[in-house]
Image 1 (tube, rainbow, N blue to C red):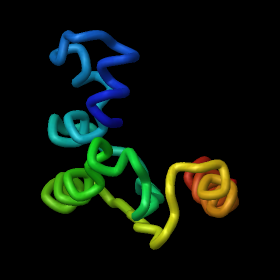
Image 2: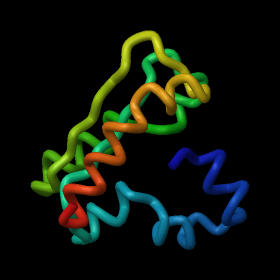
Image 3: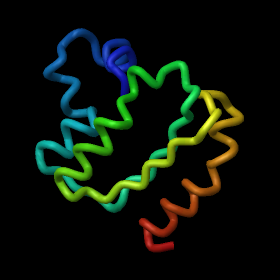
Image 4: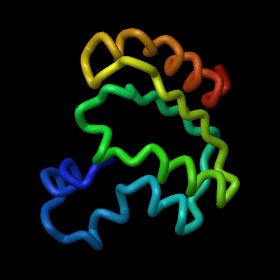
Length: 97
């Protein structure tokens, strides 16, 4: 989650953000089933979303991650709709179908 969103949702207490920041959670030892993330390369929020930092912390800690950088996509409904089925399948597998 980007800095702007964390500040809007949780206020200015940056320490409180850590409970919701996936990078901090993974860095502090939390693990889960493989993470699936899709990110549009033309997303206006990309500078705040830090997919490279997510990939690095997952690589460094052994947290499985599938990060799909989707060329030409932004942050629109079309982007979400285009890859939603992949996420439903991913979560169904994680939940044991």
